[in-house]
Image (tube, rainbow, N blue to C red; front, side):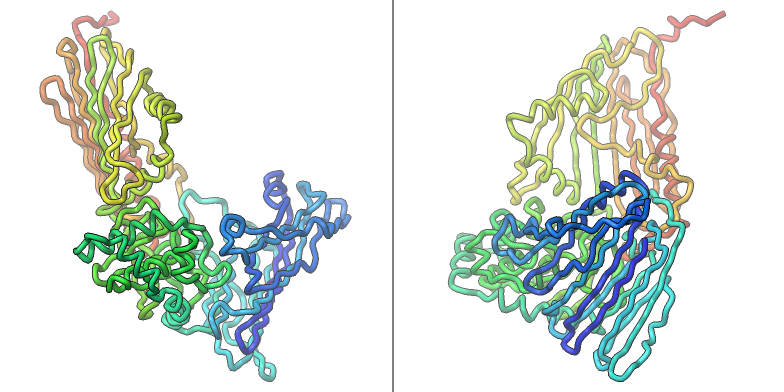
Length: 599
C-alpha cells in the first residue's frame, strides 16, 4: 500500500484533509474486499469529494471509475431513522479488478463545522499487519493554534517547522513485510505505529465542550416531567425510581446505532426523542438524564470507548470514544440504556473495564472491571445412566452479569416456531442421540428480575456397560465448556499485546452409574497455578455417583487497567495445556472378571 494524508487546519479549527491510497490487490479475497470502497461522512458537518478513482491492471492500463459508479447512499441509520438523515455514504465501485491490479483513489474531506468549537484532531494508525511501501502524513496549522502530539514508530519530529504564521509537521512510515496475524491481539493502535494530534490539551476540555450541547438537550420540560411521573407512579424508593426510568428507556427508546462523532455531537432534545421513540447513544443519555432530573436524581453523560480496551491515550482524540452511557453519582452506578437486555446495575461486556470521561465535571474514570465478580460462569450437569447405556439429566447455569446480558440477547429470538429445532440442536451438539427441553427462568424482556435457563435431556445408547471401559466426562448439554480452551493458544508464540480480563469458570459433572456397573477407578485431583491464573480438577466418589469439578480462574496479569504483553502469552498457553490434560481424565468402569487376558 502507498498512502498519503495531508491535513490543513484553519484558525477556527475547520480543516481540509486530502487522502490518497494506492493498494495492490494480491488475492481474490482482496478483490472481493475492495470491489467497493464506502466512505462515510456527515452531510451537515462535512463535504466529501472523490478527486480521482481508477484501477491499474497488471498490464499497466488505467481504467477510470465512471461517474455513475461514484454515488451517494443513505447510511443505515439514515435509512431507519429520519432524525439522522445527514449521515451519508459515498460509494466508489472500481472496474477491472483482479489479483495483481492496483486500486487508486484520492478524496478530499472538508470539515466545515468542527465537532467542538476550536477542536481539531487527527489519528493515524499504521497496522503492523499491513504492508506499507510508503506512507506520509503532513499537518499544517496556524502556529497560534497549539497542537498536542503523540507519535510512536514513525519517522519525523513532533517539533514543527515554522513558515510565517504556519506550523508544519511531516511523518513517514514504511513496512515491507507485514506481521502475520496473531492468535490474540489488542486494538492495533495499542502497539502499531501511530500519530495523534489534538488542539485540546486535556480530556476535561472535551468533556466541557460535549456537556455544553448535551445539557441544553436534556432540559426538564412538561412532557419529560409527565412521562417521569407516569413511569415512577407508586414508587417511593429513589433507586427503584432510577431503575424504573432506566428500564423504560432501555425498552421503549429504540437504539439507532450511530458511532459517537458520526454526524456530529449535538444530541436531539429529550422532547423529540420521546416523540420519536428512537435515538442514538447520545440521545439515550439525554432522555435518561432528563427523566432522572425530573425526579431529582442527578446523572451525567459518560463518553466511553466501548470494546476498546483499558488504555486512554495521552492526547485527547475523539476517536478513542465511540459510545455514550450514563453515570448516577448517588448510586455510584454506570448504566447503558442502549442495551435493552442489561438489568439496572449491569453493563454489557464491552462497557466493562473501559476508560471513561464524565462530561458534567470532566472527570476521567473507569467503568467497573471485567472481573470474576461480573464475568463468571457456573455450570452443573447431573447425568443418570441406566443399565442399557442410556442417560438422562439436567444442566443448570449461573451465567453471571456478563453472561446474562448475552443470554437475553439470544433467547429473545426464541419462539414457538424455532424452539423445537433449537432444543434438538443443543442435544445433538453434545454428542447425544436423544431429545431435550429448555426450561426458562424468567423472560428475556423483563429487566426487573434475573434471567437464566436450565436444560433437561434424555439420550439412548450413549455407553456400552457390557464391556470394561473408560469414560471421559460427557459434554454438558446446553452449556459451554473450557475443555477446548487450548485451541485458542495453539500458536507457540504471540507477538502482540492482548486483552486478558479476570474471569472465573466452574463446571461440575455429577454422574450416577447403575448399581450393576462396578466403578473401578476415578482420576486423581490436579491443581496448577501460574501468573496467568489457576486451574483445578477434583474428583469425588460417593457410592455409584462420581462428581468432577473443573475450575479455571484467569487473571489480568498486570491489573485491570493494563494489557497483557507478548511475553505473558506463554503463561496462558501453559495454563490452557493443563486444562486440556485435566479433561483427559477418565472414569474406569465394568466387570474386570469378564475381561479376556489375551494369554
